[in-house]
Image (cartoon, rainbow, N blue to C red; front, top):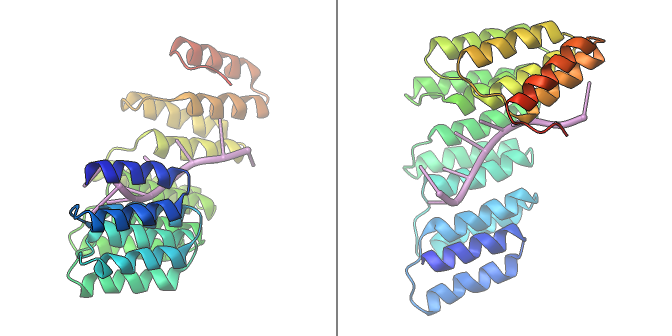
Length: 245
RNA sequence: AAUAGUGG
């Protein structure tokens, strides 16, 4: 089964759906034990290109092939639906999974929260995070980052910063993605000073800036006519072994 | 990890 699954992952990257179906059928005819794993890979591949109906069909075939869908398979379907902005379908999947005895996990919630934020429904995303905690599911770095990005998208910079504080207080560490999102927003808003402050916080907390971090800052500083600071940042970037693009 | 997050 591992060989088949590895092969299916490769085919998924190239979007070769028919080949994947043939392999799944081949697994059955050659009595290789089936699990939700290959179906989940397929659901995800369909989701990546927006084919939610096909993702739904792949999901349905899990039981069709005598397996029981697990939380990961539900998550893949839910994510495909959320990414396609099919919020109603996703919430339906969310309900189905619980009726089916699958407990939503941090990936389930984060996936939904991200989808809501992308759909411009941060308020709902924040409510969902509260629900999540009420259900004893602890938000992680990805969850908080999704909320922060949603708030930034909704132009709520102050709220995003206070969420960053909440995150830190709750013992959850922001990572490079968290900081890059914030830095980028403040640079776009013409507030490189705030971005620099966050950059200092980032490094003082041991979070490593990457090429994107420096790129955002260099660009932001130049845009704000702070050429000397920008050049300074470029030097730091090179010292750290990041290649400017 | 077979499923979730950063480019203007």
